[in-house]
Amino acid sequence: ATHTPLPVLGRDVLVPLVTGGEVDYAALDYAASAPALQRVWDDIAAYAPYYGSVHRGAGYLSQLSTDLFENSRKEVAAFLGCRPDDQVVFTRATTDSLNLLAAALPQGTRVFVFETEHHASLLPWQQRDGIEVGYLSAPRSPRQAVETLERALAAWRADDQEADTGAGAALVCVTGASNVTGELWPVRELAEVAHAHGARIVLDAAQLAPHHPVDIAALDVDWVAFSGHKLYAPFGAGVLAGRADWLRAARPYLAGGGASRKVALSVREGVGGVEVEWHTTEARHEAGSPNVIGAYAIASACKALTEAGFESLVARERRLIAKVREGLAEVDEVRVLSLFGDDAPRVGVISFVVEGWNSSHFAAALSAEYGIGVRDGLFCAHPLVRTLLGGEPGEAGECGAPETAPGERSLNAIRVSFGAGTPDEHVERFVGAVK
Ligand code: PMP
Image 1 (spheres, rainbow, N blue to C red):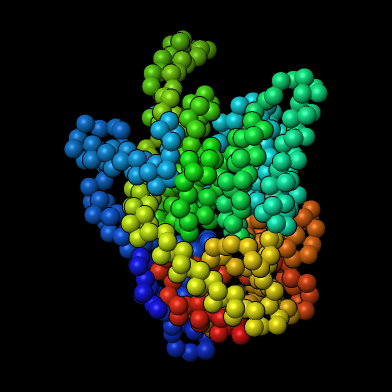
Image 2 (cartoon, protein in one colour):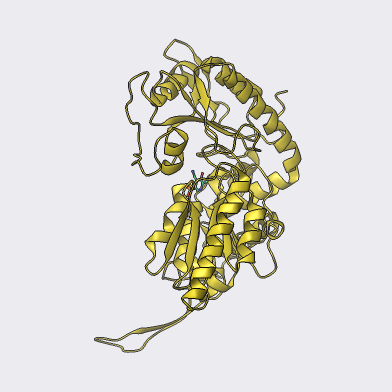
C-alpha cells in the first residue's frame, strides 16, 4: 500500500512537534511546489560538476551543456506531444510563460479568460496596451464553461462583423486543473469552440501536467504553459510550448545576448540607433544565459513520469483522493470547496473550510501538532475563492491570512495536495488530524 513507484526527496525531514517528540514531515502542499524526484536529483547531481555556458563556448563543457539544453527541449516536446512546427521556450515558470505569451500577442488581440483563473492566467493580459480582455463568469459545470465561452466568442464575432473591422485575433486562456478545487476543465471541448470561432487557446497546465498526460496535439490547444517546480523538478525553470508564428513575429521578451543574431550601431557616436536582427527560433525569447540545470531537471522529470506511466500514477492518486474526501465527509464542520460538484473528475488538490475555525490557525495547528504541511489562504485565485466561500467575486482579496474569529464566515481556506511519492500514511495522518 505504501509502494512509491517514483521516489521523491525530503522524506528524511523530521519535524519537532509542540506536543513533544518529532515526526517525519508530511508534505501535502504539492500544488504549491512538489518535492523533487530522486531521479531528477540524481541526473542533476551527475551533470552539475560539468556545468558550462550554453550557446557560448567552443570548449567541451560548453558543448556538453548546449547539447543537454537543446536535448531537454526535444524531451519536453516529446512529453507534450508537440507538432513538428511548435516551439518549446524555456522560461522561469508558468507565470513567466503566460506573461511571455501576453507580450507576444498581435496588437488588438481580444483575450477571453474565466474569472475563476489563477492570477497567473488572469492578470498578464491586462498588462498589455491595446489588448481587450473579456472576463467570463464562473461556470458551475464543465458544460456551462463550454456554453459560456461559445456565447462570448459568438457575440465577439457578431460585434466584430457589425463594426466591419475585420476579425482580429482572439485568445482563450484556460486552466486544465484548478489549483483550488483540483477539478478538471473540459480543455478539448473549449479548444474546439475556440477554434470554431477562429480564436486560439493557451492551456495553463501548471496543475494538470504533474497529474495527467498533456498532449498538445490531442487536446488541440495552441500553447501549453507549466512550471518545473510543480512537476517534481524544482530548479527554477518553466515552459511555454506551442505555435511558432506569433512567437516569431513578436518583439523578443527580453532584449540581450543570445536572442540577437546580428547587431550593428547605425551611428557611432551621439544620437543614433542600433540595428538588430533577432533570432526566429526559441532563442528569440531566451536572452541571457539560460537556466540549463532547470531545463535539464524538467526534461528528466518528463522522462521519469513517462517511464513510470501516468496510468499507475492516476490510479494511485485516485485512491488517495477518495481517502481524503471520504475522511473529510465524516466531519460535520468541514465544507469542501467545489465549482463543478462532487462527481467532477479531479486531481489531488482539495480545498476546504472548517466551521468555527480560522483557516490559518487550522493550517498552523496541522503543522505544529502533526508535522503536516498544507497551504492556507486564497491561493492566488482571489475571485474564485471568494465565490466558493459565498462572497462576491468583486470583493477584494488579500494575500496573507485575514483574521476571522472562530464562528465567523471564513475569508480564506485550507488546501491539501499530493501526488507521486505521497505515502498513504501521510493522508491518513491528515484525515486523523482533521477529525
Ligand atoms: N497556474 C496555476 C493553475 C497554478 O496553480 C500556479 C501556481 N500556483 C500558477 C499558474 C503559477 O505558477 P508559478 O508560480 O510556478 O509561476
